[in-house]
Image 1 (cartoon, rainbow, N blue to C red):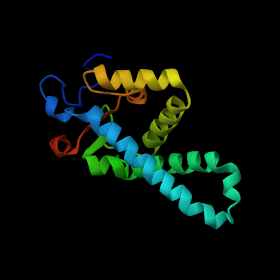
Image 2: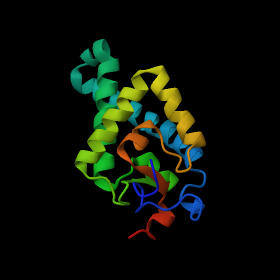
Image 3: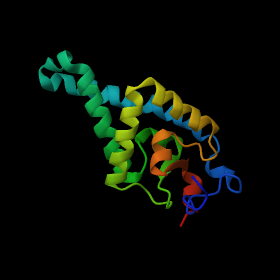
Image 4: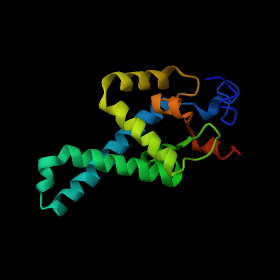
Length: 153
């Protein structure tokens, strides 16, 4: 994608501070979000009279999807992202709305379900100038450091 496509996002060369340490923060965030999703799933099991133990993976995937979509819709960041001080922005440097959060969550879920897209996504985060994963690249979004995000229009 050319620079005009990302015209509203900070330039990664002139404003590297927006993207500094984002890949390592995203790894930390992923671990935190897995723990949160697992905890919520475990708390829901007794409310199903423990029948959820028969479909636990499906419950976990559903909880994870809803958690990610709801938190990204609300403030453009999951609880783990808020803890790490990063948030998503669209190519127009806006926070995610519910539709963008849904598309990003679908992309994330699809890439997590298959090895090649997930490896490609991690590789893109490690090497790309804006540290974007596969879903970010497709949507034109980027995870940036929140302290610098207040500098955006």
